[in-house]
Image 1 (cartoon, rainbow, N blue to C red):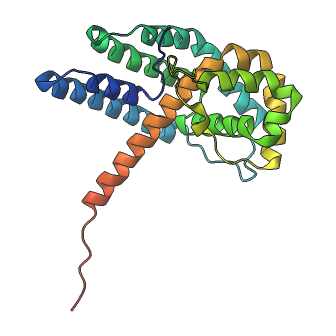
Image 2 (image 1 turned 45 degrees about the vertical axis):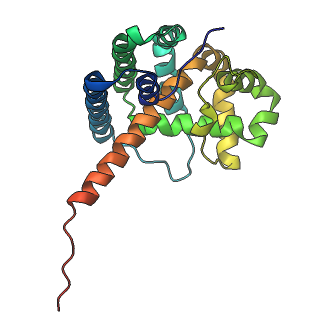
Length: 234
């Protein structure tokens, strides 16, 4: 049975490294991955600055922004399928091409966000709220969301014999209020067919969120290292 290795692009590549690439090639390969992560992180940072986003005071997703989020997913759905298929039958001999395809995919998603006028920060916020709604008690018990909930759960389900391992996408969710559940449910139901068609793009959400958080964490650490030590007057 095929094994699906999907999730944060960096986590996937680290796993491949552990599987057996050693010595100089490990160092060289790991450095190339790190360099690409930095490039993606810098691109995310530039987009966040260019397309500044602040969470609305009421915490609710606007319809036009939700539609833009869905359109990004529809635009990248085909590339997502190709990306997943590439990892269905991986081998260490393909490790370099898989790395290149991983980042090529990330860049295509980033380009789609830029074209839609949506920053990575806003994109991730919408994705996280949607997952929070799908995982909420009200969301899971709502008949109108049943198809979407089942399809989303299937992305994270793992066979009992662990022969088909998938990324746990439920971790993307954030706590949601009753108002957010009501609004986001209406938005999801209105675009149900498009959400189901682009369901696998939630894997891209994990990558975008993971790299964004990793880059910001690294920046915070660098800022902390560069902060001058305070000098107390004696």
